[in-house]
Image (cartoon, rainbow, N blue to C red; front, side):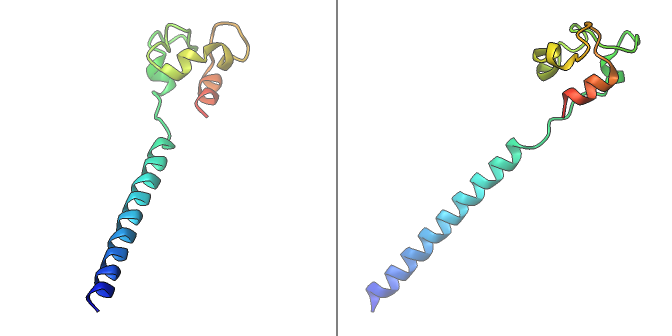
Length: 88
């Protein structure tokens, strides 16, 4: 009888440990997929010229690395719309 009781407790403990580990892994995935907040266009456009250059976005890693791709017109001036679409 004691071995049955011990086996039940062991199984319950293992089940609890597995559930806790799965829960932690599931939460990590949600945190990794959480959207990154980016500065508002007006905050980045410090010169107030209505467009952004590669120098203006140098503090935003994603936009800085993808400036050429995000600058759809390829004119070196990223518009407000291009900046917003670059973060989607």
